[in-house]
Structure formats: structure tokens, C-alpha cells
Length: 296
Image (cartoon, rainbow, N blue to C red; front, side):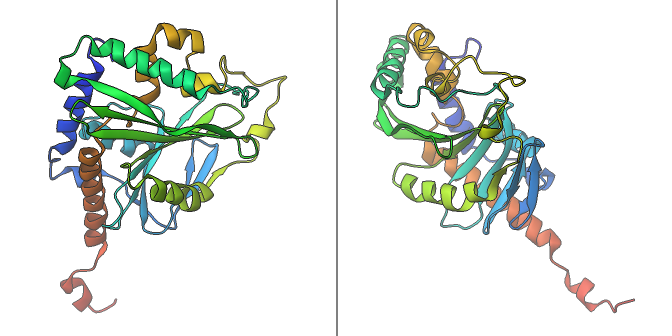
């Protein structure tokens, strides 16, 4: 993030997400509708669920930039609801980190990780005015790993000085050569419902292809990541480095679409995506003059 403070990024993002996009923006996206199967990175496939749309890698990055977000460039797509009653967004990322060992699955110290984030955040707060500070409250979902499915999930809750709460939820699936991150942007009351949507409708339609699964790892030929599950939670840093660079660890692990005022972000993205879908639907509908034309 260069010299730009994280809190400044938070505030700027909040205002940017609240701004109105150019009218021409909605016409420049390739909206993939439900029922369509898409290929991703040559390693995965995804069938878009009912009442949702998909934006590919390039369009997802473009949407982020136009909304004032800073892409990680690990994006491989995003999923969005089209129903007015649904108000969430899901970003999918893939990092070719090398095979991540899950040997420490029973040694994840959630309290130590939490304290690292808290310490780093409070150290950074010393440079901020009281009304500009934000604080880590705790785990909304404690880090846990499912050895059968090779899934790591966690969600951290924070709040501003004005007691506005925000969070992100990450579900990370380990693969032969790295990991896929499903980053769910939602609010606290809707998290349980939206997690269920992620698991029952989205994850079930996401396929890690044969030869790319975690169990396909070949120790003789495949690259191995330099960190394990704890390092993955810390954004690729080891525990010792995270203690030394607590605030940096916080940024690296959670800067992506998590530490944003959720209500503002969802309102902007939700309206933007529904505008995309409705415009595509209107463009596809035949005009009255078309209907009156006799067939050739």
C-alpha cells in the first residue's frame, strides 16, 4: 500500500464505494448468467447457480478499480446475486503458492493469531486521531480446518471508533499447487445465511479438476509453499514475522475486501451488479418492431 495508511484506505474506499459509477460502465462487462459453465485458470470449473451472475477475472478486476478498490491481481472471478432480497458479493482468488502442508492443522493457535492482529492494529492506532481509529474485536468465526475437504475458514470482526462493525469471511480450499480463496463480503446479521448460500449453492458448483486436487500432490515434482496453515491465515507470513510486523500482517491478510464498511460496500456493489444484469436482459429482449417483422 506504499505510504498510504490503512485507515485512509478504509475511509477513501468507503466514499468511493458510495459514489455513482459512470452510466457507460454497465455496458462494458460480460455478464455470465446462471446455468453457464465457465473454465478458470485451466484448473477449475464453475457452473453459475440460479439467480446469480458471474464476472470473469478481467471484469472482476475492472469492477474493483471502477469502484475504487485495489485488486490483488489474484482474482479469478466473482459471483453476485440478482435478487433484490440478497445483498452480498463473493470474490474468488487463486494463488499459486506451492503446495501448503496441513501438518499443523491441530496446532492453529487462534488466540495467538488474534493477539497479533490486535497488537498490530493498536500500534497503528497511535498514529491516528481517536475518532479515526479502529479496533479488532475478535474472531467472528475462529480459524478451523477440515482435513477431509482441505478447507480453512475464518472471519474476524472489527469496529470503528464510532462502533460501526465490519468483517470479512474467508473460506480457503487447498489444492495441489496453491489455494483458492472464497471471500464473502456481507454484514454481521446475514453472515450465517450467506455462508450457507456459499456452501450449498456456490461451492458445490465449483470443481477442482482432476490432477489439481490436494491429494494429487507429488512430492517429487511439485513446489512446496514456505508456510503452513498459520502462515496462510497471516497472509503468507510466518508467526515470528507476524509478531514483528503485526500491522503489516493485518494489511496483507485482510486488506482484500474485508476491512470495508460493509453497508456502504454492499449497497454500491449490489446496485451496480443488478444494473449490469438488468441492462443485459433489456438488451436481449426483442423490440416491438422486431416482433412485428415477418420471418424470412
